[in-house]
Image (cartoon, rainbow, N blue to C red):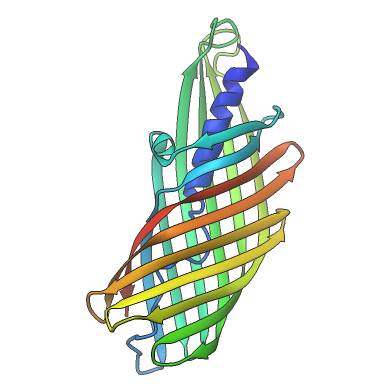
Length: 263
């Protein structure tokens, strides 16, 4: 079996990993706007499931193979998605906020080999978890606008498995994984154009396990009621991680869409 076959599968899997994460992964536009309903205790809460149709480009390497250049559209990635879940939650008290962003994806791809001697088929399965926990403080706020300074930690965990069927390697498998933590800081802003329509965006940058981790976005939202809003925009996220032959140096970008529930 040629190594190029495995490299192709690894590249596809890495694209899928990135598309799910991110998705993630950082502070998204699906967060409360300036006009919110406050509980008797003074706290406001929001929950926002979201969808990010991101493509991916960059360099990846796993299983001790050389780096491979990847350039995949969202439709290419979506064809290999088995399961994905993305959601953000936030609690706010006055100028203070605490937020979390959780993403989980499960992906798979399969390919036959040229001669089928070492194996007839090779399957790649990948599971990825990306979780961000952070806090923010409003450095400016009035009836129409708010600007928060935010910071937090994001944990990445990626595990991939190659399984062989048929040929000499029939029934054998190999795994490769990586887990790292990045510290992030930046700003998030919200501006109400009308009582129903608002703009929101953010910019974050950091490092840690990765040499560089950054995330920027801009979006527009519409309030259907005090508790329900819809948000649409565009997001770009980049991460540069490498350790012991595991390389994940990619940029993801694409439209993002979500529903915000406030209570």
